[in-house]
Amino acid sequence: MEVRKAEIKDLDIVVQMKMDMFKEVGSVTLLQENAESKIYAKYKELYAQEKCCHYLVYENSKAVACGGAVVRRNGAEMEWLGAVRRVRVSDAVFRRRIQ
Image (cartoon, rainbow, N blue to C red; front, top):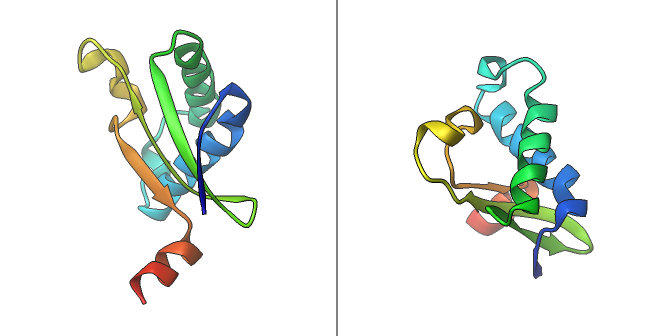
């Protein structure tokens, strides 16, 4: 297992894992239209300003978990992104860890 700090080039993985998390908890239908592209654009902007970071956990060269945070000045500024801290672990890794 290897942990790497995500870079802008890794945002496809980060955003996909975030969307997978929303799907898994059944809240993807509550998101704004085009939420995935909006989240990607916002993260890209925040990464360029060094106000956002994520860490990806790789197992056998595949990203299996992601966690991150957004630096913010007030709650409303990032409200549309949902909760600030999230961790997403692939189903296979989760099952293996709880057995």
